[in-house]
Image (cartoon, rainbow, N blue to C red; front, side):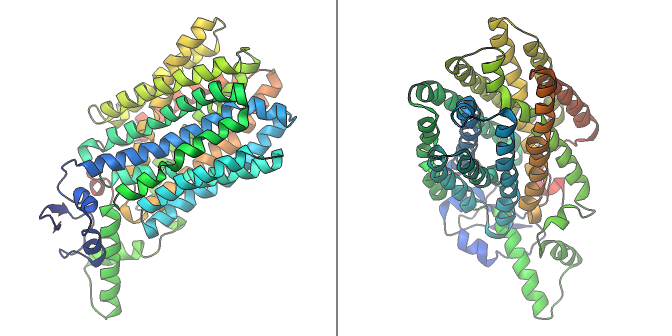
Amino acid sequence: MSSITADGRAAPALDHAGSDIGPLEQHHLQYANYRAVAGDGEVTKTHWHIATANALGWGFDGMDGVIFGLVSPMVIKEFSLSLPEFRSGMQIALFVGIAGLYFWPWLADRFGRRTLLAVNIALFSLLMPVAALSPTFAIFVVARSLLFFALNGEWSLGSMLVAETWPARLRGRVISITRSAWCLGASLAGAITGLVATNFGWRVAVMVPGVIALLAIYVRSTCPESPYWVRAQDRKRRISETLSRGGTVSGDDSAWFGKAKSVGISQVFMPDVLPATLVALFVACASTCIYGTVGAWMPLYLATEKHWSTTEYSLFYVFYGLCGFLGLCVVGWLIDRIGRRLTFIVTLIEGAIFMTLWVYSEDRVLLWAFGLAWCLGFLGFWGPSTTLTAEIFPTRIRGAANGVVWAIAYFVGFVLFPFVTIALQQHTGSFALAFLCIPVLMIAMAIGVFLFVPEHSGKELNEIIE
């Protein structure tokens, strides 16, 4: 089945809807940017606008996470905190942020993808100065909590919009390459910390990304709504109106409507979706556990155990982000060429090997060399990770399912797993053993990917799951 857009281009039907264009799609077809992505797979300027919008979101997420990690030694010193006190405060913020992981994608299944993506970024720009001006650690934790809640929608929204607009043959590489903007954000955070925090303090450094995030205006003005979402809404409306008139619908429509009329957590665990949910949960939980230690504690580890200055570890983060950017770009090209699974496994093994060598290194040159080497795989594996969770669920619950999966993973990796990290640090007096857990988890994840993750390279979204 296909619809014909106002430009006379055939648009593939993404669900088993009727051949007529629905009223919502008729409305969106008035806009050139929607017509540009509703057609036959040709890449247009609008596709690049969508990719840029997703990249901006990930870039701000990278700045947010890394800049707070880099200034953590300064925050601990200013507020006279013990390590467990700081950990507890950040865990409260992370716990609140979990609600955002589900809330924003859940809203996206009801109100669309693009507006909420812009709202996420706009809230980020407003809340960064609030965190920077916090007079007490308690207020800092509240501001940090709101920031997590606001920006965590990016974990699902941007990748979904790319997956639902870009051609299948390019979907994996575009999601991965736009995901690599997180690394550029991390590099920029390192530069901001090194240049601003060391001279003007951590508060001024935290304010800078908020100004940059005003680019949210660009997101709202150039990105169209997802044709997948629009057609799903039209299909839902058509079936509902037919049934309310006492009419009959096809068996496929009836079965689909029974699942689509109510979007909630329970649907993510229905028998037809459960296999995809379990695979996505495995990938997401392993991803967050692997990243959690580095994301939260590496600046403190380098400052207290390797005796690096703020300037040196900030400079390391600049190159850490650039190497991660390179890794994700290479991975993005590979996952559409040799497949998701093989690329996934190779990046995980590479990261695990060099992470192990890095932990055991004392020489400064080797710390830099091995550190930048593990960045390639350690950050590169996020390409296939976020690609899989973006493409594995049906359109009717793609947002809610992504929200549930990443919310659970966030809780496991960023709220629970730090207890393990700090317990190991307190018991041994060093973060080294905690960091050695990372390569073990990466190898375990590589084995799990080999055994359980299906290959979706080049498939249309509805070929993956109905």
